[in-house]
Image (cartoon, rainbow, N blue to C red):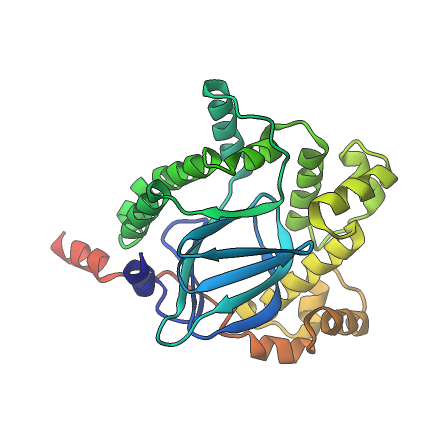
Length: 305
């Protein structure tokens, strides 16, 4: 796994893979605690160690443990890595529809004991998930293999996660008609439309909740208020636009829905501890997104054909 990720992600930061929804991660240096934004995903680390901090809890994901997020979530992370042993990993974006179908199928075959929905959890990486991950990485070395075999292997990994020791909490989050499920839907709306007009009253109405109930259940899922969450989502997206698209702070602030550049700068520095320009320079390598690596194996196949 380490060798394959090292080949597919040769430089610091994030690297796209040949399969949509799968991203490679590499960090050649340790990273102190910093705010991050993860999509709903399964994050597997092959080398090094990452820690996530959310709601007063610490989540460790390393060569023995993987992380699962049921909803889009801003939280703090730190990374253990060195040039000699870089942090190497991959993130598989969770498709809520496909995952919910798998969860329902699992429950039909073997209903799980009632589990409370969880926003995120870290659990032990078992041999079957590890084996499937290696096969996925091998498929990613060839565009043809990635296209034909990759989706099936991602589905297999998702199935293994759902049927794991802590998978019941993810299944509950996806399949129960609970407050959690309604808040999760609101979070996906915010994640997809962070640059539009988002008001709490409308979000609460769409979740079929009163505004006070929406606030209570929203905070139970995210450990923050709706307004704080929307603000964090916009600031994180602006940071990525500056780093990955080369936008200025003013342009990025407008893209994510800010009308005041000065308000954007104040809130940005309050969240990240640096001005937008300083933060973009500081994390340029850490948060960069490189195109897929053309692997030697795929090149040989093209030449052979």
